[in-house]
Image (cartoon, rainbow, N blue to C red; front, side, top):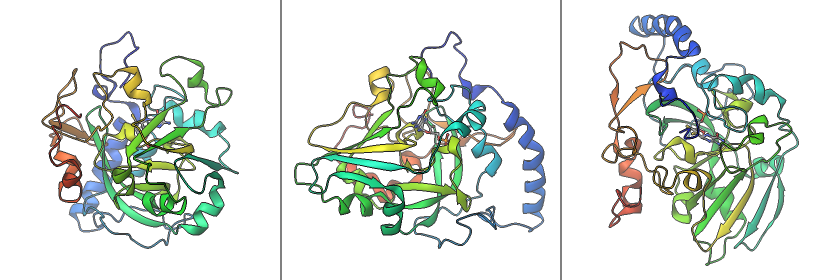
Length: 314
Ligand code: MTE
């Protein structure tokens, strides 16, 4: 993603320490799996806060990625552009209490406490594929609830055609915000029908436990058919709009990061192919997997884009 570096090597091309070290775990897990000791999807916390939440719909029947890999290979530019550093740096973020400001084209604007939001929106677990625009992917058991259920309670007006999300801006704690790697705060957006789609989730946990800070605690978006940069972390504001909002990555590099950002193997990033992806935690000897259109969720979401030229609306 990074466009303001001196190095032209994609961060995704470097085998990082966590992934390297996780190879031992991977081999152990693969051995256990082939011996029938664990089932795909069974890697989850037994004692975490969300250990017993019910399974929701749409879960992929895939081997989930090692939790340690997901928690220690993160993109969180508010803290660092290095994928390991946010694990430590994000510990400084205070996530309780937390509130979300709701403004714009809604009948019920206001400041909502996260605790109250969670009382109205019972959580469930969904195992989703996740595809970063940098051509790596993972499979994660997220804990959360459908975004649409929450948005409906704010009663969007008929003028609400788009929804904009904003991350906390606090450069004292979020040290990365002291540099101009992005035009802060991080902002993302969805068309209202994308936001209301039942696959789109607000997430508060993963692997049966609370979301680690570096993965976007206490509240983040997950839109599994779009590149990962749409899945904005640490959300403090939701704005309903008549017009398409400007987003942080689009503002930074409009020819590289579009508003839609639907996973599409046929439309390359200007600097690399999107046809294949490296599964997070896999060894360098493991063949890359073919990227699927809409990240494998075509059946559910392709109709949202009928008649649109997806190479133009990338
Ligand atoms: N949200 C904020 N606020 N800041 C970020 O830097 N990175 C995005 C997205 N959400 C990012 C963000 C990118 S590029 C990706 S791939 C995903 O978060 C990564 O999620 P993960 O770190 O939990 O794997």
